[in-house]
Image (cartoon, rainbow, N blue to C red; front, top):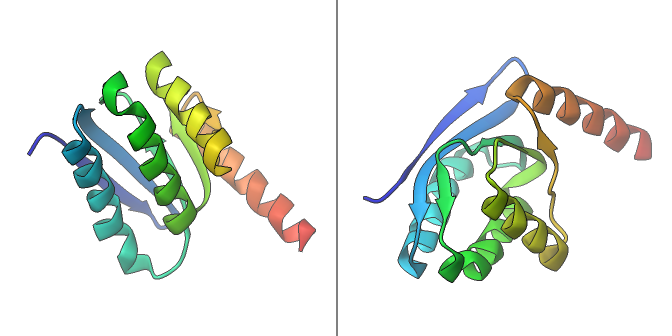
Length: 130
């Protein structure tokens, strides 16, 4: 297998932290990357808040557009509020493009702790909006 995603459920903050260790280079990689999210997230049976820590995530330009489509699916299907931490410039480009195309989150934070604070603030805003 070319890549794996380490998932951790932070019960205290009700947040999933995903740490993909991937070099996504082919369409098959994109599908496997998506499948790993799908397999883990289905157990929650609800949309979850998620933090993606991207220190070990690389994306080849040849599959950037396809990955962006599946990234949109991950966010639309499995997440409520999400943040990215430590994305490289190429990944940021495709995250922002995907966000614009599929109307999905593009928020970034400097650390997991900052991302948790951002998610908590988004929860308050969501509750106030009703």
